[in-house]
Image (cartoon, rainbow, N blue to C red):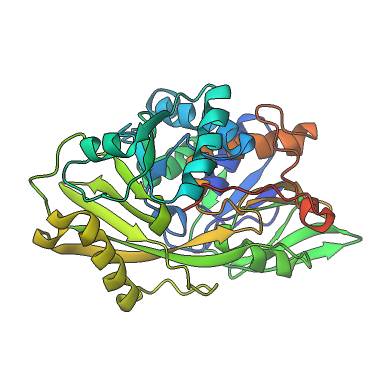
Length: 385
């Protein structure tokens, strides 16, 4: 790579939505010479490119709701502000509850959402069944629905940020694998890669499920665990109504949403072991499909179009990690536990604030630091599927 940089002020590791958003927001703030590194041939091919593309306001903790309140409007405004269409579709998320324990928890969640200005609807079991006439939910006790939840295109969001960052003189490079991090006197000094060494003062670890491995290179323990999630898409289903929402059978972690003229469906495997395997587990795919067909018999008429697996980046409390580490100049924006894509736009802005001003202002995420794990300040999120 003839134009490979030898020096930078900031090197960002990871070219998914976190890294791309951070690169853009740092450049916009005039933070200096910035290099964004992605090991795949194209940006957004890691965890971002393998996610379902869902965006939602419905969460169970104040900080996650506030992240959505800041991030989702950025996605809505993306075409105007970033000059890139992103296919935001507010089809609504309908979460179906089949256990009394979940009903009690979601009553609290909805009360919190209402207090913060998110006007989630509460549905009775009968209202759920009326809203989903093609589905079988005899056991639905209640449900929640928010119309502005929905879908958007992950690749468009990533490339929008990458292209605008390049306009601001960020060097955004693909096919670059980070092999080590050099330090001296308790601070970072360089990133080593398969193309050479970049001397730098700051490193941003935005490597998603691989953030723990990057941390190990720097001698920093980061409690992020990769966990496989997989999904399939179907051939066209003509009977599917145009207003079919993103449906989550919460008790089974089973979900459905429109994809093209068919559906995307997936179900979390409660027995999945942590690891970096992104191959499709065919046995689990059949288990998930059988569960999906019981809820939506129409699926029996559809064919399998494609299937893939991706990685969640799980932390012990299912909340992200923002900010500094014990190694001076080594920063983190990772660990979003399955909802990083939707919070990526605001996350890059918040890390920029932390790096340049010492704390996050737009949303208070200062409690979501790495130190909370050692200090026992965990914040648990009920609504992760």
